[in-house]
Amino acid sequence: MADIELILPKMGESVAEATITAWLKNVGDTIESEESVVEIATDKVDSEVPSSEDGILSKILVGEGEIAQVGQAIAIITTKGGGSAPAPVAKETVAAPAPIVETAALVEAVAISKEDFKNSSNFYSPLVKTIASKEGVSVNELEALSGTGQNGRVTKKDILEYIDQKGSVQITAQAVAPKVPVASAPKSYSGEVEIIQMDRMRKLIADHMVNSVATSPHVTSFVEADVTNIVNWRNKVKNEFQKREGQKITFTPIFIEAIVKAIKDFPLINSMIDGDTIVRKKYINIGMAAALPSGNLIVPVIKNADQLNLVGVTKAVNDLALRARTNQLKPDEIQDGTYTVTNVGTFGNVMGTPIINQPQVAILAMGAIVKKPAVVETPEGDAIAIRHKIFLSHSYDHRVVDGALGGMFVRRVADYLESFDINREF
Image 1 (cartoon, helix red, strand yellow):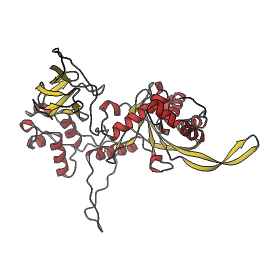
Image 2: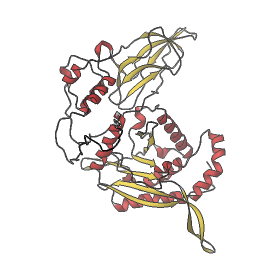
Image 3: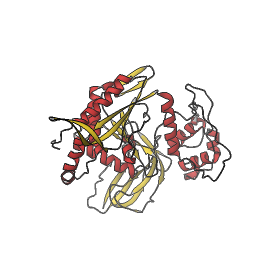
Image 4: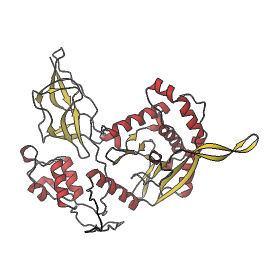
């Protein structure tokens, strides 16, 4: 028999602690490797911590409602293996349900005052406090709730159900510019309708998009690129690529590679605005918008994409896309993007006008690759040929990126795509 410490894993550079919200196993229960043992909450997401070993939960070190630090042992698991010395084994992975995307403002674009929780005798987790502040739920309202957690503690489920029952968000009215008019919902409808209540993630996405349009003057430039060489190269190498690397190669990594090259040529695209200053990032983190099975949207981030080769980018894209679909992303993996890519071609769209992912200043949408007749230059003169074409749509913040820069950037991306070497090795 051996005792293994279950460690609170790292959950992102900005996350140092978490609240234990619920133990999913009791002392004496049998646990399998990778099985979720405990639910935790930070000010960003709810997550579950899995076991690193098969065994029995022999001791709980941090109770429900208590706060643990990253790297701290929160339980002891007794395994069937030999040895008597404790072997702290930390797994830095968190099986996270669809993370709560951070947003900058609510639809009404008004500030919500933060309540002083210090005067309350009740314990509230960081996540509950964050939800209460964003949704305008006062401390008095929280104290009046009958919580379902240990000792009547108010859980995330309790506060979200309360917000849904209220029917509308109560917020402190403090006007800020720009003021976004919100149309009141009609109270009656003609004909048969279905009323669908937005889930919390959809509300946050809606707020994020409205805030982005209200914050940044959007401009979109379009370029059509000939990607015939890329299509032919991928068709030629895809079977060998999967056999050698154990990965499917899609068009997305090739496009990301071209975008990274263009960012190096036009580094101001890789910026954000802080007040009246421009912060140009010297690292390149590419966010890739991904649709979840629920229909919601999440943007996992490929960190330091400029330091990866095509195989590395392919593996990162496939890994993040898979874990996005299965709700296995860590909080740190949806943060710190510097430029975002979205593939509207996945849905058969030839082009789109994407909304900037704040606080970034630009985003590029890739349309569907379509066969078209085109004029091509040959040694014998011009000829009509069937070529694979794609529209690139580049939306950018006109406060930072003027039309010349925005247009030259997307043209440079197209140039890199069109000059792709069909005899390239991978």
